Image 1: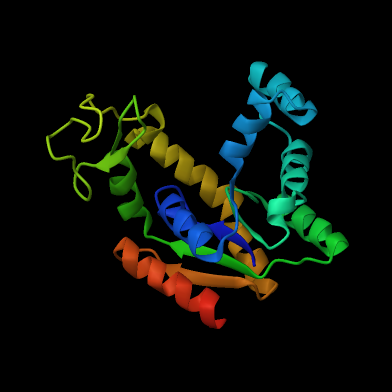
Image 2: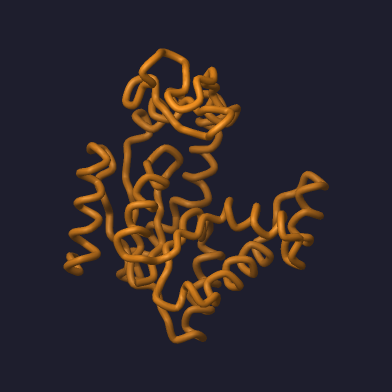
Amino acid sequence: MRIVLLGPPGAGKGTQAKKIAERYAIPHISTGDLFRENLKNETPLGKKAKAYMDAGKLVPDELVIALVEDRITKDDCQGGYLLDGFPRTVAQASALSTFNEKLGKPLDYVLNIEVPESLLIGRIVGRRVCPKCGSSYHIEFNPPKQEGICDVEGEKLIQRADDSEETVKTRLDVYNSQSAPLVDYYHFKKLLKNIDGNQKPDAVTADIFNILDNGVN
């Protein structure tokens, strides 16, 4: 099963991606993790990406596409995969489609988690993380046992710089201008499945599993 997971920042993609990957025994491919892995291992593609990043430039589409194409041809992806954070643009989606056609392995589903923008801001701004173990909390929806302290490490929780309200609004603007058109692209290709993300996480998971288990339209 080959799946693309779409949704704005704060939609809960990371939570759902983990559950999907576990249930269907497919690798969860996050572009962020993919970049870090290639940088850490100093692969040829990683070195090219680092040169752009060190210069303060965005990594160009063709290089991002090459990283993903290289990853989905690995042995563990032969039975399928879940892409999270890619494609981000219609150009990337078109390149992925062309590559999959060459492999004879087209996408099966594109899951789009929908959440109203007003709720997204509250979700993200309220997030807190442990700087030591990376455990994630939310001041309203998933608070630690002791306010401001990690349950696991006892460390003081922090708010990531990119979770500030100003940064969140900028991230949403970028998503709406670049990534939102993907919804129309995949709707036209009859691959898109919209998921109501304004539910409890378990209810969102149940809706996703219903689609993937039964091929619900």
